[in-house]
Structures are given as structure tokens and as C-alpha cells.
Length: 252
Image 1 (spheres, helix red, strand yellow):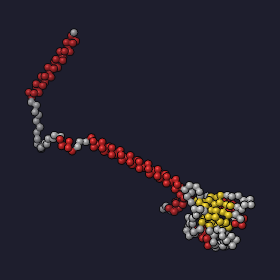
Image 2 (cartoon, rainbow, N blue to C red):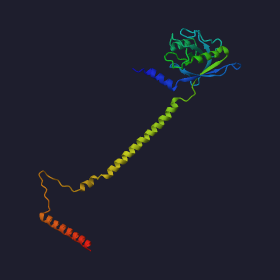
Image 3 (cartoon, rainbow, N blue to C red):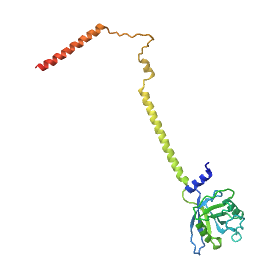
């Protein structure tokens, strides 16, 4: 039996509909650079259209399979905090994000234990922003924790959505289909009119003389034997005249 949920997840991964980007902003006097990392949004939660800016904190415990220490809002009270969490086989993605949500974090960045491509994290329950990144990205983000004075921003991917391509394509296909249908209907109407013109109208059909035959009717020819004999004599005479003319022309 087809699992439509997993099939939809695979299709979304192929077309990259739910990807977003993590921007890093190090402090002015720092050896760190502004970088940009691609990630994959989870099924739960959503990244705002304008993105969300905040500071990054390493979760404790690191895999977030249990209740986390609260977000360090005492250090930066008016700042959104994101929890950097390592992927774990001991609990689900939604459980990890729920623990981050309960600890006061506004977002969760889960990095893989391997360097595989990002996947869409399934589940339900959390409402905060949650994204998935590679292991190498997670290790790089550890250099941009809030203690270094860095900030990060999670924003939707600025690349064109698939809908921007699908809508014009659907319009073009629809217009082509309409013109093909109109052309087919026009050809059928022309063919029907031509057939109508080649047929006699009911008024003209009534003018054609008709003869009704009854059962047992015997048709008799009106030509007599005498008339047939006279016709044969005329044809014979004409034939003899042509023979004579032909013979005369060769005798000269």
C-alpha cells in the first residue's frame, strides 16, 4: 500500500519547496565571516515571510531528548533564542523541538549526525521554527553562539517558488487547449455545413418524380420487335456506308 505522506515528503524534497536559509552575522570586530547556509524546514512550525532574527545557543542536553535548560534570556532579555540541537535516535524530531519550545526558545536548528543531505522532519505539535541542517553546518554554527556576540537569521529561500513556474505554465497549456478545442469545433462546423450544402433540401426532394411499385407488378418493355428490327437495319446500312467509303479511299 502506498504511503502518501512519505511520497509527498519525497516530492517536496525533490522540488525544494520548503527550504530556507540561515544567515550568520558576527560582531563587527571579529575574525568570523558572514555566511549563508541552506537548510530544510520541518513539517511543523513555519518560517515567517520576513524571517526571524535571534541568537544561537547550544542546547543542554545536546540531543534535547529531555527537558532543556531555559533559554538565557537574562543575558539578552529582548532577543529571540534558537537552540542548536544534535540529531538523536533516542527521540523524535518533534519531541526535541517541543523540549526547546518549553524551554523558551523561538526556534530549533537540528543538525545531522552525518553529512547526509537535509531532510524534512516529520511530526506534529511544535509551533516554533524548526529546520534541519547537515553535520558540517551544525559544527560551523557553533562558532556563532550568542556568547561570541553573533546573531543569526532564519529566512525563507529567496529563490522562485515552484508555483511561479507552474501558474504561467498552466495558463499557457490552458490557452493552447482552448485554441485547439476552438479549431476542432470550427473544422467540424465547416464539414457539417459542407455536407448540408451538398444534400438536397426537403422541398427539392419532393419535386423528384417517383413511381410506386406494387407487389406482383410485371414490367413490360414498350419497344416492339418491329422497332428493334428497323433499328438493326438502319445500323447495318450505316456500317455498309462506312465500309464502302473506307474501301474507296484505299482503291485510289
